[in-house]
Image: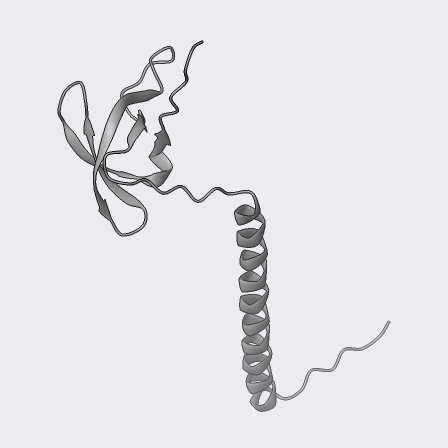
Length: 114
């Protein structure tokens, strides 16, 4: 059977620390590279919605909704923009205002019947 020889303890511990550091750095680089690829794939087909003041939108109903309840509330009006992704929206039926993220909004498309 083969014999295994280990280096002395005073030289092995620094070697172990150095190896652990190199493996940690390599793992961090691999994670960042993987996250970058996932971000690129996600953004390939992503639309970048932007709403102006007084645009009509539907608001997604997240909480307190039963299975057959409406998924979207509205139409609502965009009142104010905060940054690039948050909007202050007023419900046209109740007059209630609240902040919503752009992912919770959907534009109202007017359709004409002929």
